[in-house]
Image 1 (cartoon, rainbow, N blue to C red):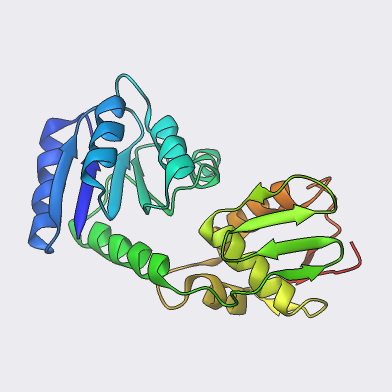
Image 2: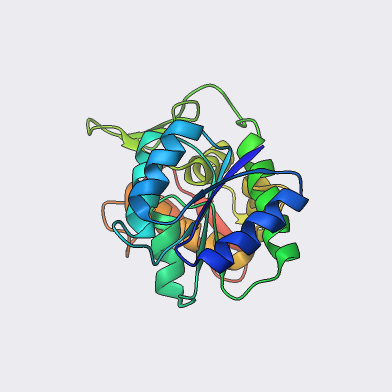
Length: 226
């Protein structure tokens, strides 16, 4: 497996490269945002480990561009640990967000979890329709009525698929975590952020959802009557 490490801190980049090589990865390095995109396109890595504070092109823009062109798993590394920063990174399509400082063991574990999730097969290859919505899990496209298709991330599509398959039934948060992330590391905070992101694409008014509803103390339910 080839991993692209992007960090303008040369010393830290070397440490990260050493850590990943010890874990069996081939390593490609880049030290600014433009170089990161060039190396990503040339080398076609299976994983990107991406710092946010980069010269020439910041990490969020790099993440957005990677996600617009492909599905390579992306782990963001950042000293920015505030919830808004984490949500922003995940909204742009990052698969995980690791706050500095972190241990080498933690990085390897997170990398392996992200790669396991990326290889999970779709729950259903057939399009699902309910309440005026159509989800194509294969293409990860959501269509609402006559509107243009909306592209979903891998996790957004999987969450909506799980909910639509059990429409009208309240699903516990832990069950949804298992359905989306399997045994590879999701938690309630990540689920909450994922629901927030999905509602922004799914609902006409995300602050007053009619499809993806919260059930206090339990979890979430997909209402087909939306």
